[in-house]
Image 1 (tube, one colour):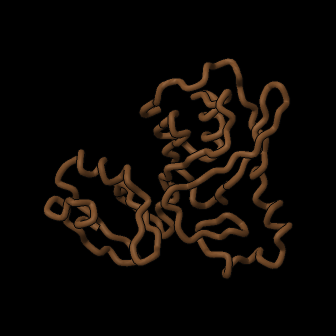
Image 2 (tube, rainbow, N blue to C red; image 1 turned 45 degrees about the vertical axis):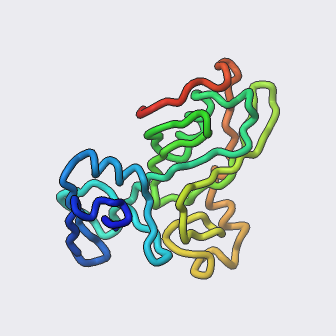
Length: 189
């Protein structure tokens, strides 16, 4: 991976066992540069790079930063406030790019991913938007979890039950029309 990041001479790597590795960066700027590119893939498997913590649990890390794009939002509701309202229901928003309706969101991997959401305008109009996770690889299309694929899903026999358990996938989001569309891009929140 250090070679893929063009930093092979500025990163050292150690195998910690249990599928965990330690990458030591020579500079904070290099670390930030790499963290913003994740999640990563190797040999058709997704992996997450996070800042190290003194004590890590077997399930660590739970929070995975994903670039998420919202597709199908009517242009007159394309505002920072509305994107934040939708994005905050997916996880903590780190960065927003309003012109692309794209956000860097910290997603809790212990919860099902949401791929569609119905949004409602103040006038009562409903629109279903699509939620696209960039670099998402190998997840369950039945229950939305990242811990397994469709063939290993325990809810596969009861698709209706899986939809109920995923609650909130089609939860309504109230959009505001009070802000002007196409406000400038925003950095860290």
